[in-house]
Image 1 (cartoon, rainbow, N blue to C red):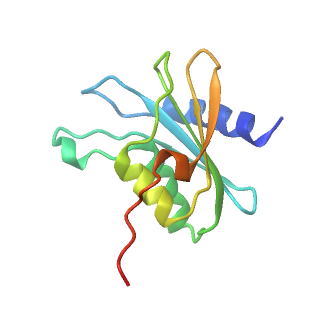
Image 2 (cartoon, rainbow, N blue to C red; image 1 turned 90 degrees about the vertical axis):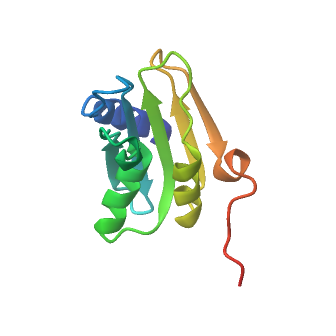
Length: 128
């Protein structure tokens, strides 16, 4: 089993734990670190929508809070028949931590793989 398959399997399991009482749109993410560890996340909604956190950021923040800073790939899966791509905020967080590969999967088993630079070619970078 390849890295993409493993991450998609873990993202699917994480999706089942989503807290999405408002949108009913469950998303799971699985992030691989350079040492092969996998961190998962699910979307966590809130009645105050701005307080909602996407699955991708949950996974990244869990890994960072565990001391991890080097990542190889992240997979994202939702309940949709189409690919669910990370939102702009999540993409910017991925840029911050230099996550090079983004894997998306639909619920039927279709997958696609992208380089982060292709999804966010003009990421914000502070002026030095």
